[in-house]
Length: 328
Image 1 (tube, rainbow, N blue to C red):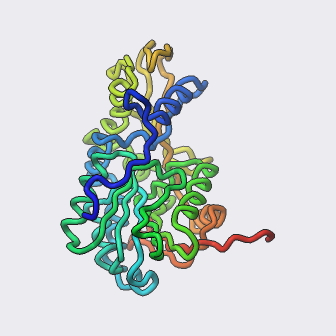
Image 2: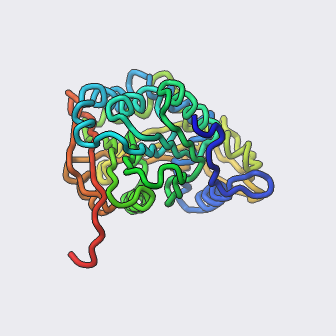
């Protein structure tokens, strides 16, 4: 690995607390419908639990996306070409990322993630699998524009955003993210992005509420993180996990539901919740071809190729950076 420590761009206060995390939690808990952005799931334990989720029977997206990556390597190589710096938004998957890197002969690999220890472990693992490939981990909030390492400044870029993480965001936020990715990667860049597809409700809800309870543990870990990092006193045993399909928004929502009246403190502020009240922790939007294209175009990316798995449950879309225009 080119730099085991990489670059750190997270804004911490004097106590080592992520200022953005604290602000999002306090603001979200003060809302009538309490809500915390899904990106804060991914402390080191949350990242480990998500890796476990990808292996449960009900969670089809990882298997479907991996099928595409295994079967379409020649397509990727032809359309992407060699020598690009692969910039992955999120720590590299132990399965998916090597499949892409093996297919396209990259010039460098730059994983971006806010979970620093997990990021560096994933980067070291990838560096071990690809001897001679420069790896530059960057600890940063990739929902904003990120300054990439100088070593890849002149390389053409390929953004990689697998797993349909784009579906975790409401359309406005998703568009902002895509535009920030466009700014991070620059002119002439490409983006390979996972986008999950609309399907039967029972399949969708089961994918986010597995029988083994791994997703429930992942959801509840957010409360554990708040207690640990923000001095919280949330009674974790007073909350249960719930996943629900909301058709009007074409998304699965995850909530933490209070099973009794509770009161607690976070970062010196007091909060109360009644039995049945929820903290909305994640959206997972599902797409059609047209809605996926509309979102990408609004984010300054032009779709050029789309692949699906054999069951047509999941899609990978290759898009190119749109050239800025001053008029329609």
